[in-house]
Structure formats: structure tokens, C-alpha cells
Image (cartoon, one colour):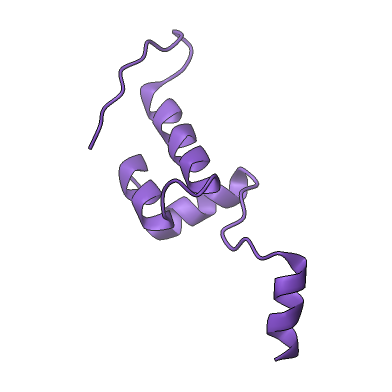
Length: 72
């Protein structure tokens, strides 16, 4: 596993920066839900709630795919 060291502005907490990074890595598909939750320090359930609060979809279905699933 790699590491990253950055200096944060005084008004940004390390935990907040780590959480936002994990949210973005999950959103872009770089990490799975479980991986992102683990690295952020949360359970999957708690991380799902956090994703919701940040407007990030847990299930990213394209509308056409969802329609096909429903029609089956």
C-alpha cells in the first residue's frame, strides 16, 4: 500500500481530508465500498450513510439498465 503526505490548511482536519478522499476514490471507482469504508475508518453501513449525506449514490445504475432489470 502506498502512502501520501500532504500539508493541510490549518482549518482542515486530517480525518475530514481522509474521509473526503475516500468518498472521491469510491465515487470514481478506484476503491470498493468496503475498501473506502475501511480506509476512512467506518463500517460499511456508516460509510453508506456518509455517502448519502454527500450526495454520492451507492448504487450507480444507468436508467436504461435499471429499466431492463425491472422489466425482467
